[in-house]
Length: 89
Image 1 (tube, one colour):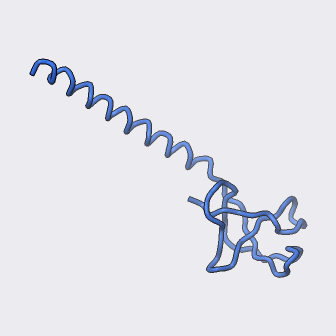
Image 2 (cartoon, one colour; image 1 turned 90 degrees about the horizontal axis):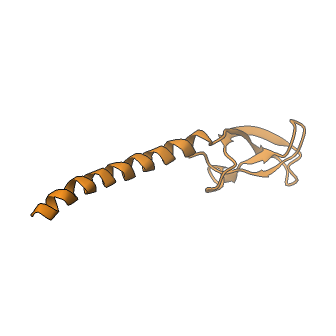
Image 3 (tube, one colour; image 1 turned 180 degrees about the horizontal axis):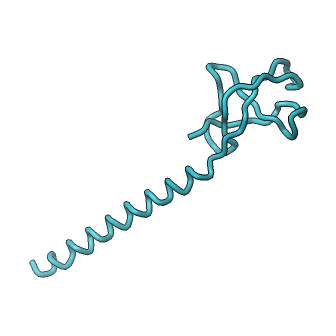
């Protein structure tokens, strides 16, 4: 019984630390998600684009509007929209 009384506070402390660390890493990752202007391609080459929803460039499912894939610009405002974007989390 004496052994059990020493184990319980250590187990509670360990669970508290794991919970604190897991919430810290979730908050840290969400701060780095960027909002990138997404575009719908009006032609197959991506030279004509129409502004659509905000997306991200991290890992995850493709950014879409309905079944239409949303693309990002590869450079300045006049560049083609051929960069694959991902959904924001």
